[in-house]
Length: 148
Image 1 (cartoon, rainbow, N blue to C red):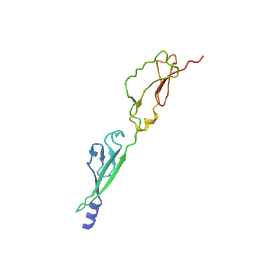
Image 2: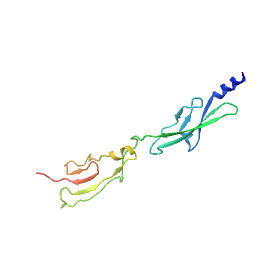
Image 3: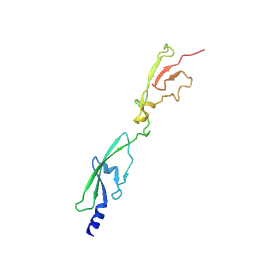
Image 4: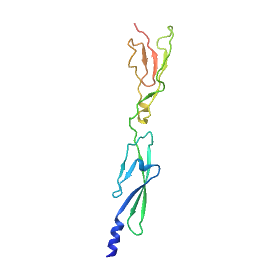
């Protein structure tokens, strides 16, 4: 009869998250079920992979335990706006400049890895006479030739 009491206690498992790398600030392990919950949002730009150490312990005498390692990979999403390298760009052209001449290059970057190769440049204002053209992939601005 005593064996059945001990075996029931031995079968009850409790789960704990070992607080390595401040993982308990971001994750919670439900002690009875072992379900891992997020406490707050994760950001791939801040930390792309999180390593958790989970310990499962029985209630027997002596208490026995086992450890599992969980790696959580955070997928990047479009949560950052592109940023220009400079807040404004200024350049000068001679009135003798040839049509189609290089004017300047503007440059931006995006902290989101998924969007770095998808930046598109366009002139959205101030080009009413259509005298300038911008390469949508490089940010290069050229003076447009005049056709008659």
